[in-house]
Every structure is written in C-alpha cells, then in structure tokens.
Length: 137
Image 1 (spheres, rainbow, N blue to C red):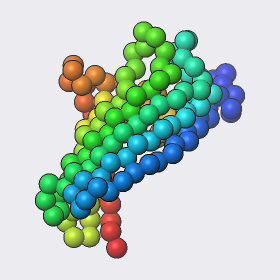
Image 2 (cartoon, one colour):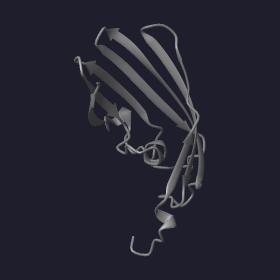
Image 3 (cartoon, rainbow, N blue to C red):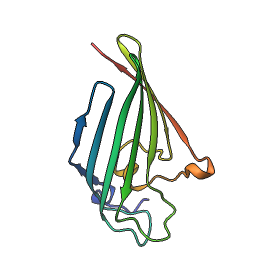
C-alpha cells in the first residue's frame, strides 16, 4: 500500500468493560465496543463500527479454567468474508506462571483487527491457535 497516508494506517477501539464475579468459580463480562477503522478492507464496510462482546470464565479445578469470548459486530458489511470472533481458551496455573491456550477464528490480537476481521469459520474448521505465558509475582 504505497499510497496510504499516515492517518489511513490508524484505528481506534473503545470498550466499556462490565464484569461480575458470581462465585469463586464463575465470572462473566459484557463489553460494548466502538471501533474506528480509518482504512477498511471491504468496499461497503463502515469506518465506525459498534459491537457487543460477552465472555466468561469457569474454573474447573484449583489451577485450571475454561474461558469463552464472543463478539457480535452490529456494523458488519453485507456479504462480507469476515465473521464474528469466537474464542475458547484454557488457563493453566503452575504456581508463578499462567499458560494460556487459545483457539479462535480470529488471527489478529489487537482489538480493531480482532473485532472487525475474524476470517476463520468454526464450522469449516478454520481455527487458529494462540499461546501466552504470563508470569505472576
């Protein structure tokens, strides 16, 4: 994209995170989101997009939890190749480290890309794998 200006390369995301821990094993979150893409990848895609995310965490043992995250994009263009992101994760705590295994139909890890451009389809087996290690002090 040699003819893009600096502003074309910018995107912004704002979210209001509303969460509740119901008990020691289950928590839930809602995330109303606004995304601004100065450059869109599809002709009919709006620059300003609104989405609603929902996610939860269920502890299945003292050191392991299952996480689920789904986002519905209200502003997605008609006949688009992109989908709403769905991610399933497993957190494994090892006493100082947390290993996160993530399975998603979205490849991007930044919010504008994740919320707008999930290219995989769970029904077709288009699932991407991600891995994080978090150090807890």
